Length: 331
Ligand SMILES: Nc1ncnc2c1ncn2[C@@H]1O[C@H](COP(=O)(O)OP(=O)(O)OP(=O)(O)O)[C@@H](O)[C@H]1O
Ligand code: SF4
Ligand SMILES: [Mg+2]
Figure (spheres, rainbow, N blue to C red):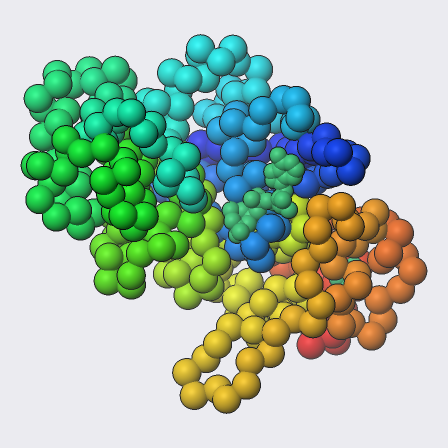
């Protein structure tokens, strides 16, 4: 068997925004790779920059006020170098995104069935009726009742949770090679969430799609993903195989995240002290410095940003105090 191909390679991707309060560096030098048949998780607190990363990969950051630098290689082609017309073709056919905010993904003046079927007609070459039948099938699979009649409704006729299911159908009906799922089930109840996660898994198993899976629940990430990236204040602070990162977290932030997960039977939660800084408060050195509990953090941490360095096979950490040799001493 040949090695799985790299579908997406993001290299040194940074995003800043010009705001009335000045320039803010929301995302800093993000690197990641996703291979075919792989689900890569992205985890981080609200405001960490996960959706900005997803939008930047899709070429959806408006410039200005945004400024994007770095490379987004899809099957070897830098999407950032393509004209919008070429990018739009690839986006509809091979790369799909399930948006976190379903309202912004749907056009209020078109019927939802038409909006989900259109890419199938344009990119998959399906005629109108087979395309609509496929949409009805997907609406049923994501738990939309009476899909035959619901395809004729407009977005405002759906509740928030139902709109999210429409957007999920839109993301997966065209069988993308790369799917970016930005908190795809955040407003759905757990039973329908499980069905939708299963649909995404099938996409990966049957079509060997590559998925960037953004989610704020460690248990779901652990169930869905082979590898995970931990993002703090616009930087990746740890990455590696899910089991390694969750069982042996090396970055103090990842350790805090895992300790703060509510557990059955536990009487007290252990939240990470402090709060994620706003983008206007980002520091020049390690952005986690003000919250870091390590006793030996020092002035160097506050001045120079640490790069991701390997600590064990496949696992990398951005922390000056977590080299491969002294990892065990810190635990
Ligand atoms: N156009 C913009 N101008 C200025 N700041 C922005 C802009 N878009 C996003 N940001 C800021 O970038 C930061 C990251 O936002 P983002 O939506 O990516 O967070 P997130 O990790 O997806 O959070 P959540 O889990 O709540 O979805 C936020 O502080 C946000 O305010
Ligand atoms: S680099 Fe320093 S401040 Fe940042 S997490 Fe590591 S020890 Fe803490
Ligand atoms: Mg988000």
